[in-house]
Image 1 (cartoon, rainbow, N blue to C red):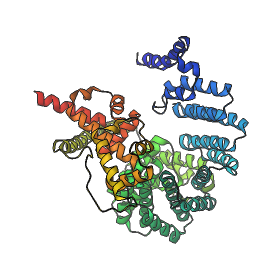
Image 2: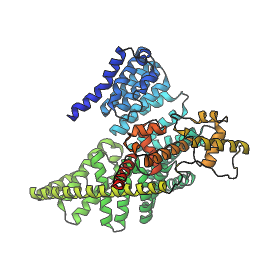
Image 3: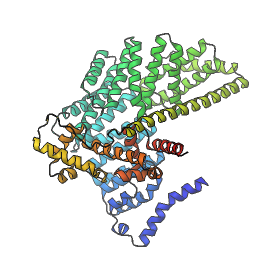
Image 4: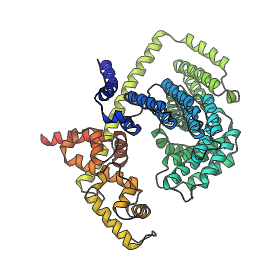
Length: 572
């Protein structure tokens, strides 16, 4: 029944298109690209309902021989396709079409995005490298410098993963030098932000290469440079986490095991947040190794097991983590647990297959306590010791433990949600400033005349009181024009007196407003997330949910659920 319903929902958009075209709808008469994209651009990634609109978009673009629109259409098709094989198919079609355009920038972008699919969705580094190289060739004479050096950076990442550290280092030196040169340039703040991220990411990759090349003095100096130069504004938390990860690995090498654990733990939350399972595995591994070196095997083994859990899920592992399984095999051999020893022996064989396939260049250079033949012999011996009853017992225990872990996890998650809800409720009840409707006079530290500052602040005060921030698509340019000032003055005043950038300021006002409304107007609790987003001026459900959690520390769905429960209790 659910399958039939899902198929029906998937077919409805195309049916509506045909119906509207038959009735002479002006949108489809004009065949406007912008209007077509409005039908799907706010749908979530991998939502197949967008595909009928995208096919019409592509048909129009091909008919008009508009290569930029063809490129956009295929990139949309990649984004909204659920299956990775379809993503690759559309990316390949995109390359084939834009090659006819003789537009090197379009061609370079198309090859780059095809390489990204190989890299992120397939973890096939050699094909990804081939596509990046093609993108690089077409980028040589283009004007988009950011695209050019993004390609150089991604080429370096793949070469580093494959073990070509000297080659990768040359590319990272190049991208690092370029991005660093633009950090203090007289360009738009968004470009400065992008170039800062490019610089810190290049620096991080340089550290990895120097460590793998055993130039530890250079890698350590770059770690200190990264941590010292990165702003404490909170905009670069992920980049800071990567530097702490590198520092933790450096501490481990220097046998400062507790410091290693501390720095690795500090890095872990941000890296897990973006689901970077490769570096999450590396962090778990080095935490486990640190505990093992401190003779705390009981603390080490759970982290080694976490590495295996990621390997099971992602079917991917890097050569650096191979000895994770050697530690587990030795541990279970030591405590006379043949079933576990057999399991991790099999896992190491699986890991070796992947390493030998994906990392041929460095697989032969890895020090192996257990080679393949020894592992196969050990597997045979261990399997002969096991009985069906023992295996059944292990499965039963694992199922029970899994159930217990699930229950504990859900209870812990619910307690966390409750605590965050109560904290936010306390702020509302105590009338703390959910809407920033006042400002304090402070020393003028910006190069803006005092009379203009006061005028802008007064207009911002009126703007907040009238809740004009709810206007959808509000821009800094639009607000500056309304205030009869320029964007530079407006941006400087907001930065200095509101303590944040323009977009952050508007988003915070919107989220504070809708939070206050949800708490006091019970009717809003039955609104959809999309309706709530629209009410406060935010364009999409996903953006609204992310901003709500970022600002309030709790998901909107959890806040609404808790508020309903509380209202039900108070009505009894």
